[in-house]
Image (cartoon, rainbow, N blue to C red):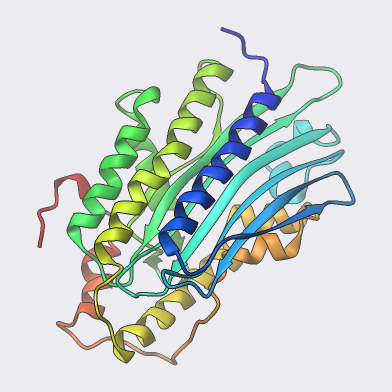
Length: 308
């Protein structure tokens, strides 16, 4: 098998993945549809952003495809790869965040991406990255176990140990450090992946990208009609504040997009439409709101939890 990257094959897969995800999630909402906006980047490349807003199921969601290129790596990438400074590069990916209206339906995030740099005096340097993770407001063991079962299945092309490696990476990455708090219940995260061959690495990335819908949609269907009131809604908006804090302070994709001159509206489409910050608020002990941080926002082996 060759290690020469086939960027065209990756491009075609990502375009198809965006189509598949927006079709399925748009049909599930019913009251709203994704609208598309194509854009170009002055320094090279472009993409298409698809956003759904004010639906019955999704208050806001975005599924973005981007394909950008340039002559010099942005600081977020070049700091750890000084040998690639000044090399032409190309990056493409699909990134999505879905913010449901019902607080009992978790927010979900997924991303699959490919990067290649072509130094003048050496072979192309390439890698894949991505994963998917889930952020509940009111957690259920059943949902967390299902999410991680699909994540483990998605890692199968890489071998038995890949799920545990990518799960740990996800737990370590999605930490709101200034709060000493996990963002959600984890899932998968990987970056700089170029093991064995291009074909092997691409197969693993495709499997993870394909795993998002079967991981998320059964949870959506199970929770979307649970009744909720003002209390649950206010807690959802409060917890969304944590999501915003992570994305704006720590998220590598956000930093890369802004530093590389990407389209700001597309980069920040991951932010929820409504959010609140309450000064020094803590939930009452013994409440479902307290259980979120005490039980669900703790790294654990979700494959072995029992139903509640």
